[in-house]
Length: 275
Image (cartoon, rainbow, N blue to C red; front, side, top):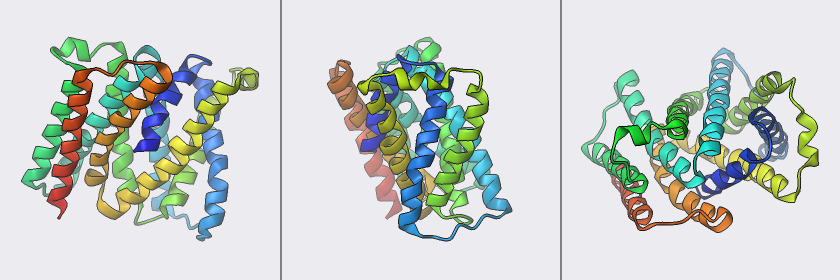
């Protein structure tokens, strides 16, 4: 969650430098390369079957869609606010989808925890009316939250068919080819004209904020379930807001601190129910 939090600041830096299709391609390309030493370290034999391929293809599509919506949301909004919307609403949507699609039994404390998390997000954003929430940037971020809920559920279900590290690698590999087709007519070599700050942000987003953090997330989804794993995403806004303040100069206000504390309380509720 700490690595993901910093990723929002890195993404904000990148949105100001180059077009979306160029950034998305290079993000997935570098991410795919960074998996090679991880695959060597695990030394797990790669086994693909019909089910694992279907999960990979579906999750790759959702990952590309998530990246597009996140890019547009952060480009026209704030990094801190973007992290709050996606990370606070994704667990809610994951919970709803799991309950509706798989008839999963939900404990009372889980309901309480998810509601508390949603309240925390509303406090952070000072949302007094629906029109404020559904402005241009927030609409993209709401779509991103929906995409990530699907990614989370697929990660849990795919764990029975493929190793999480292999799953993450093939998702990034397929997404690289998909995004290359999308960016084929763009100037992909423009990244080599960028400065040090750009490359630090791109490498951080691709490797630390994605390869490492996402692999951990997928492994956790398979171990403790997608709903409980998603609940930890309430911690991301805290790290994202601190990162945006330190690097981008985005202000930290009292309602953000209070809302963050409420969101952390939600994590406690949801995980106590697991015991």
